[in-house]
Length: 166
Image 1 (cartoon, rainbow, N blue to C red):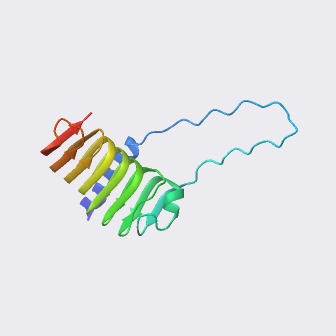
Image 2: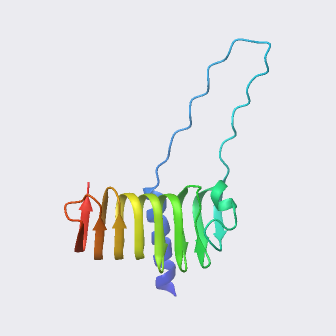
Image 3: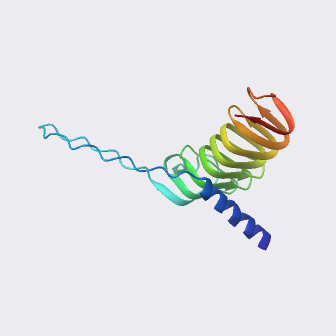
């Protein structure tokens, strides 16, 4: 049990350390007074520290509310809103953008990963980091460690033990 707690803490620390911090957008310049009503600036995107999911896109807030912390799936999780931190599920995860660590027992799927993606089967479009699993699949740049590694347009289309495309 102690090893599991230490492993989860280590994964969380790596995920938060690998996440990028983007500076806030500069304030717009003051506009000259007009008779037309001023346009309302869009609100900043909502975010949560912890989110729980039961299936990809269910509950639906996984599509709308970004995560800066942990998204936990029992048994699955995933959505369109970005995750900065750790996304983990018992069976599998499926999200558009991960900045940190994504892991699931059976599958981890994402469009963009900055950090670590680990599972039995990993799939991503672009990986700025490492895919670690039994079967890894990437369309763009990646570094993969696993039994079978597929990379479209890489040095080798597939390779045993490791593969890469930069």
